[in-house]
Image (cartoon, rainbow, N blue to C red; front, side, top):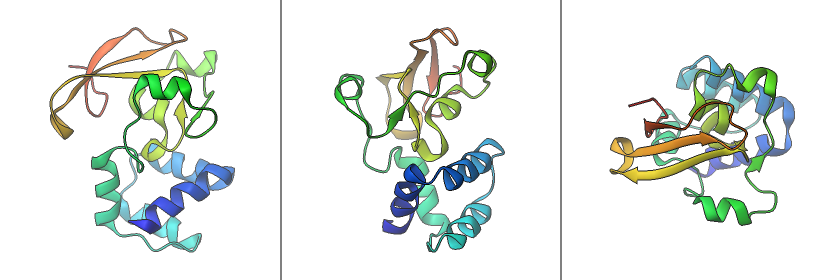
Length: 142
């Protein structure tokens, strides 16, 4: 698990790596492609680790909205672009980035109910890029 966390940490300061990870995420790449990219950067990750990170959410734990507001730096960044945000189709992914490594500071996810992969949330954008909607843990509308 430490290797996948280290890969994500490196990606936060390495734009080229982050762009490659985002590209893999956008095309729903398989674990093998992620493992190959990780190896190129000197990390040894397994499919099991990747799946665990995906199922757990953030590698350091979910952050609550009030905690997000109080954070200076860290996971969030301003990813809002009025030309592209109005057209995004996978809100949760597009707003969180690959394995939640680039959380847009305009994205809001409010817990409603459920547990792990059966949880329900409200999703919204502070910049009104899309209307508030109810979705599953992956951001798919329900």
